[in-house]
Amino acid sequence: MLGAPGAGKGTQAKKLIEEFGIPQISTGDILRANIAQGTPLGKEAKGFMDRGELVPDKVVLGLVEDRLKQPDCKKGFILDGFPRNTAQAQALDGMLAGIGMPLQLAVSVDVPFEDLMKRLTGRRTCRTCGQMYNVYFTPSKKEGVCDKDGGELFQRDDDKEETIKKRLQVYESQTAPLIDYYSGKGIVRKIAGTGSISDIYGKIKAELEKTK
Ligand code: AP5
Ligand code: MG
Image (cartoon, rainbow, N blue to C red; front, top):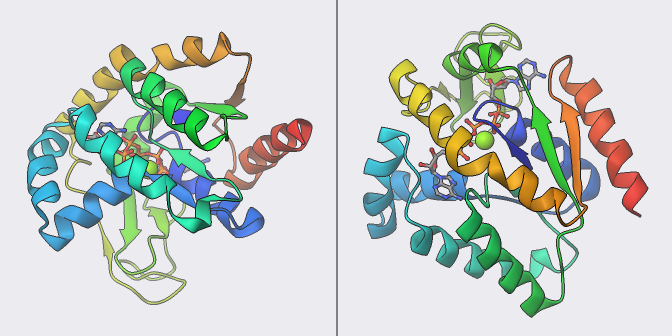
């Protein structure tokens, strides 16, 4: 899943997990879990994330390499928020060649810049199940409480206006070039990321069906 911060990568990946039963590998989620647990890796990553910068490649590549070795990846996986620059994409090509599972599709979710700020400042996430809400677009029934499991909703540390601006700049300069990288391999599908979450999901699913 390629797309700017707030494009809906995580939202769509979670729907894909439910339907296809394959794991989502979100480097952002893995890094946040490390921060919450206070691991050395989390301590190393926190400063970069709070500034809206990319965490160094060697840290992220190690995480992904370990995750891909888990047995639940044997049937396939959804990468969300990784790779993030050309060096990571090249390293990923090497890892996937090693396990004989080349990337089949790079779904690029495209949302106009002006919509992203509202999506990110309004985002709330359940601390226990990870379900995402948005106070402007998709609020929970009861403020601050998850509809699914009653968990507490929190706001991400990097969803502050200044940090969001930096994340969007980093996306434009370092991550957006990956659309051309994967276009060159003939696997990019561009999806308009505006409209309802289920309509966007329908479009992604249609592209997946074509690759079968
Ligand atoms: P990461 O966690 O990957 O964040 P991101 O790329 O900035 O993307 P987001 O998670 O903010 O957005 P999303 O596209 O998942 O949108 P969502 O579905 O939540 O990375 C965070 C940080 O970790 C990075 O800045 C970096 O420091 C580090 N990092 C992570 N990976 C790294 C890597 N590979 N290398 C180096 N560093 C790395 O949706 C957003 C909101 O919009 C939600 O509220 C949702 O409800 C709402 N929404 C979704 N769809 C719709 C819709 N159709 N209409 C209205 N609202 C919608
Ligand atoms: Mg996400």
